[in-house]
Length: 208
Image 1 (cartoon, rainbow, N blue to C red):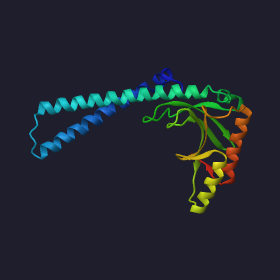
Image 2 (cartoon, helix red, strand yellow):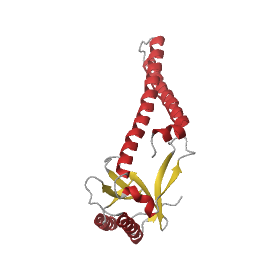
Image 3 (tube, one colour):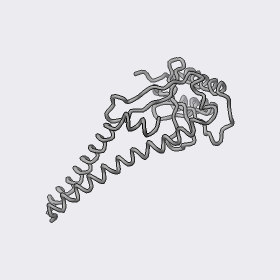
Image 4 (cartoon, helix red, strand yellow):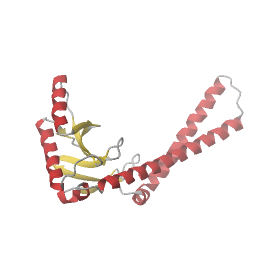
């Protein structure tokens, strides 16, 4: 996540496509509503229906475009704020690198992530979308079916290490406003413990 300059440089065509596509969707849905109304013998002037359809399409497209840009601005602001907090401003010292994602994906914006691999487990740095003061280290995992007793045992063990189930994976989170300051080497040790725990629980990394 590198800010608006990066966003517009690498995503302008995707943004314009998304705005156009949104306008078409909003316009089509509005037109369908008018057609259904006409089907049920509701008297509607064609000129009025066309004006409303056009207005809804334009407003819908503008809202989607504005929301996309605003979302990038908010996320970038908090990501940089959290990422500049010690020890997370020294992640490159323990092997974290950047890579580009979603470059060829028309439906997702091109972005850069900070990641590190430990024993085939790819750890990605991100912020919690619900709590922007929380930085998380996320591992995408392959989950196999477990019994209720096994799940309870897993939850008990991961709680001891401040690890949580996340969407399609597991994450270790730090609230930068409340956490005790730790060194970058201590952070690295905790990430290795994170991976070791996943391995001991037979939670495998996701393989493409």
